[in-house]
Each structure stands twice: as structure tokens, then as C-alpha cells.
Length: 191
Image 1: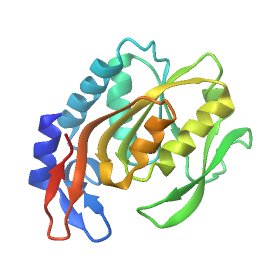
Image 2: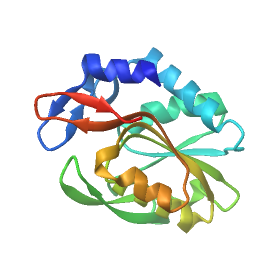
Image 3: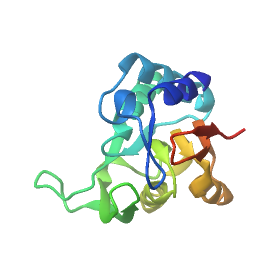
């Protein structure tokens, strides 16, 4: 998606450790009209897959997932990162390591929201090492549902998570694929 690449170049900031900050439109402030366009693009890519649910993980993936779900006319299910009082214990649970936050947590989805009849599209903001996708794929497997693929806004190809997920036979469509980021803020997109 050329428009996303241009937006990253204009508004993105490279931080030490391979972190890309896109807070002006995706991770802190949300550019809603742009998210609508991203949802349309994911719909174009996956429109023939008979999707019944969109799955993401809180927090930054929710905006894109909602726009995508609106295009498909299906619900969004988002994995929660913390056990709360309003979350039952009847959940699919999986461990995840967050590269950005540098910590481990358990993601959970209540069993009532995913089942074996579902055809699930995972939507997330970033794909780097692939730990979040691993967790979401595990939750789908636990539920017996079918993972039709993953839609990613920004993939950092140099961190290999996407290659590893694709090697498992899972379709991954990324709207922007970053091949390299330098400490001085230069971003190069993969072909």
C-alpha cells in the first residue's frame, strides 16, 4: 500500500533497537479516514475467504481490526493481555513475549467468542518477531477454528517473524514491508 509507505516516511520515527514509532496515525493518535482505507485494502486481499471473525490483540490492533470488520460485516474479537474481573476463567490462553515492552504476558479470549465453525482473519498493527501472531494462531488452534491468514499494517521484514509464520503455511499480507531501518532514521521498504 503505497499510501502507507509514504505516511511512514513522512510521519514515522525510528527509535533505537529497531522500534518504529507511528503514533501520529496508528499507535497513539488514530487517523480514522486512513484506517478506513486500510480496512478496505484488507477486505480486497481477503474478500473470497468467507471470514466470520476478525481476531486481534489489544490495544493498537483494534482500530485497524474494527475498520476491517466493518468491510466484512463480521465481529472483532480481541485478545486481552490481562485477567480482569469481567473476564471469565473459561478462556483460551497463550503466553506471548512483547518485543516492544520487553515483557511476557498471557493473552486470553473467552471461549464463547471463537469456535470450530469460525474462519478467522488475524489483523495487527506490526509484525516483527511474530510472537503476537504465534499467540493468536495458538488461540485459533485451541478453538478449533480455521485461520485464513494474517493482515498486518507494517511488517519489519528484517526481524524474520513474517518469514517464520509464512513457513508454517499461513498466508500473511502486509500493507507496508520495511526491509531496513537505520539508527539515523532511514527507512527502506522491501520489494
